[in-house]
Amino acid sequence: MNLLMVIFGLVAIFGVVGIFQSIKEKNLLAVAFNALAAGVFGWFVIMTVLNQGYPPTH
Image (tube, rainbow, N blue to C red; front, side, top):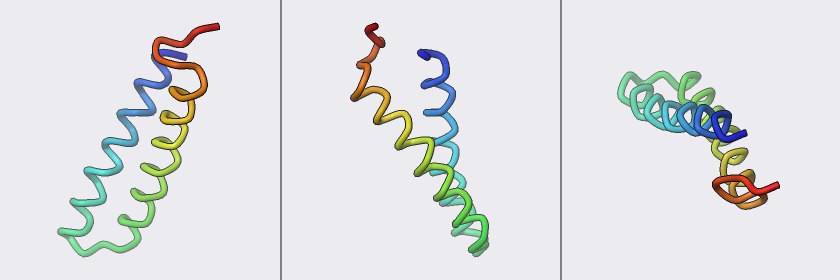
């Protein structure tokens, strides 16, 4: 689960970066998809860290 949280965290960060790039290009569909991806993956990472801690305990 450690590596999966890191990968999902990177996806969320890239989603936030993509939001700013698509705002600059005025692409509203890309803004929506990037915001959705960043929100879902970021929420998963935050809730996993709150639930299991980092590093995860069993």
